[in-house]
Length: 573
Image (tube, rainbow, N blue to C red; front, side, top):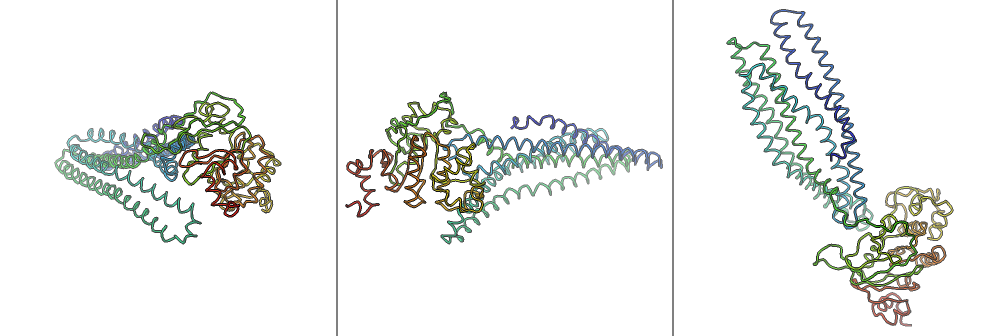
């Protein structure tokens, strides 16, 4: 955490100086008040009252300026620390591999970057105020109280340990409850995010009542966990005030007897009472700070967990500047999502080669490992056995940014970002001209519906592309990948939402616009793959057949079964 606060150490220093001035001037006030009572009121010296009163006003003004300065510098340093921490967290998330991200829920990562960072910001800001103010005021007040009356100071020797013992007990019990409360917030965020993202599915299945039940359960769970933590904290204030009032009564009783006996004057008793209040208030501030720290400790551990996550996908490539031709070789590749001998292998001994410019189709049943296979090419995951080579070089030897920059992908889940259509397409090539954007849209059969919008390519796309249909979203994603003109293009079931005629036009455009691109197509429809140069049939993570359409009809039973189930009478013929 220190590294994120380091740029603001100068500001922190100014906050400390202001707080020292603030506390010093505040501790002087009871002495000045005692002087007014002793030298002014008791002796009838109006001049002393006026002089000391004006001095109190001057000291109070200095105190106010110092307090404002501390608040301003503390807030500035806290906000800067939070901004740096949030930036560091976001950068770390961008570095994480898919396998790392699988450990965290999306809602949990979102909360760590927002709510948890805010908790740490509050502790940082308040810490620069309370963490400095409370100890200084405690020490200064104790010194002044003992200096005024050592006998009355025995009250502090009794009250302080009781107070500290109580605070320690509260913190010990509260910390685990705050951790559970943060987990409850995670669960609630996940429920809300899942429902809002999939609101159309919820409504189409008339599942509003079911989702309300899930939300209410998560909401009640958070409320119960929060109340469990807060009930402990709520006890703090009453106990603090009870101890303060008891200490005040003890001082009044003891000091009053000394005043009656002539061993103590009223002015000293008045000043001592003020210092008692200051001491107990400083202890209250310390206790509140520790309660805040106990709550923030849960946020600290969650933020630390992300920052200290070891990225299992190392970017140690040395083959910089290599222009990829497009030859892709799978050499006895095996893959499992989780490490360990007992983890299930998703892919087993996959071996094949795709030549530059070839169209390679991958087909198979659900769970056969099709998406897992193509995600190994751009190193979204790393192989656990064998190797994937591009142009004869292991993909792990390429710098990640250069490798992925030369691979275009249209993933199974089509994602568009809030912005115009033009801005979304230029994700493929930010320097593309308007004419190149238009050509890519035409090649993906997206130009027709884009031109139908009033604002055409400047039409705004809502977050997630919810204001366009599934087929339109797919075609925009294909256009985005084609605009990149990559040596390798991966299409993961990317035409499932378009009709067969449109799909045929898109495939035809690949031969003209991307003639030299090695294209991998994952599809469910035989019509989508039967013209491919090479078709790979996967079955339970193994290659069940490989060849062109006619060869597989003769030699691969799995492919023939898929073909016959889809083509019906045409297959019989």
